[in-house]
Length: 475
Image (cartoon, rainbow, N blue to C red):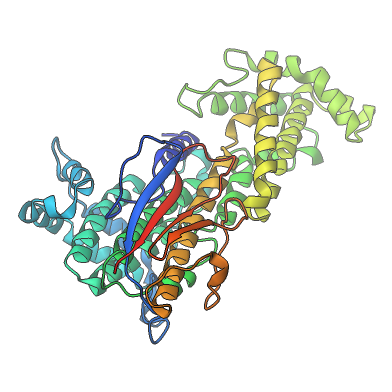
């Protein structure tokens, strides 16, 4: 399946997922604008040494080797799916309270993943992860077994829940390390699709961190969370690939301005372009020139191309010297790159600063497509929903920041006779993060010494499932 279409599916799927897993005290509410989680917490001081607990493998434990090879082996060893398969059962069990799980059946199912789990453990100990993907193949490049990786991580998540329920903190954290490292390693591939799957894997593990910190005997994980990379999944290199993939698929466009094609060469380039772009989405996309002959497409855009090139400083003589097809290709290419860069440039800024600009850029592209209809830029179908991609990245970072804040609250309570802070400003022993989505402080309201509410500020980018934690300190 075409890579861009997969990207749309992944974005849509991630957008519908809650930002974390099941909480021990989670309660379903009819208000769909928030994701309400009721947490029971025990005060917990800073561990000694402070970095006694980690959510990523230690560098000291890294060995020479390529983790990608081991992940591929893990996928190959994953149990095959069948009707009423182990994967369906795991999805069902993940929604059940631990005490209601059929333990023997669950353990038998998880044992079928033991070989995959072992390969992921070995991969987490490797110093490098090079997917060695043939990016020169452009849009037809095959991707790793991303759906299989998510199946394995769902099984790992269930195994971690059992470890947590049984008080096996060390085993739970070890598997969290392997899974979070896998999320980051998957995201080291060149595509945004892999970044987003890495986001999904890591978000699932943050749900298990939630489970762990609610245990009465849970260590304080403030520094383990703080030591995680920021951003957790760095998408910049994948964005660079997305920007350049046009020239990977159509290398003849790269230096098109520096030469004069023959009419036959220009016509052949347009014919190839029409054929490839028309088939990019498997027939599902509204490609502007669908049904037009290449010659018709050129003539439809030629007058606009001449105006565009003249505005860019091309002399009339130079414009007339090149074939009409070449003039149109240069026009469409340069206009596309301008639209693309007007979106991509904002990724160099934190999300809370870039969001309004990304949204405006997306709106302008939609207006361009709508108002120009059949004369819209042909390459615009290649643009991913960059504003949504940026939000999903920031949402994961916000999840981590909120868990850091909860652990700071537990640290405060341990030093203040089991009482919650009156405000976030009262907690001075460790820094309190702000919300990466909005750039604002988290909202905190204490009801009494044992009850408080922590919530993310309202963001225009988020209409559903804004995270809200109702905190209760155990006596």
